[in-house]
Length: 73
Image 1 (cartoon, rainbow, N blue to C red):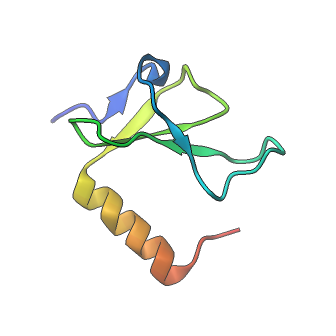
Image 2: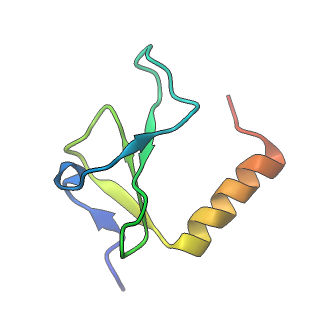
């Protein structure tokens, strides 16, 4: 099985914060575009923590489900 995590996400640059994130130290998600192995996703409050690595089809399905079913609050 292929490892689907990046142990220290800070080794990658170019992260973008979710448009749903705010400046009040709430739940913040960051995504990295154009990574050759998939779509890395990390918690912005823990930049040196791990990032999950999603396949492009898996990430697209996740985003489509959020659009269809709404984002939980």
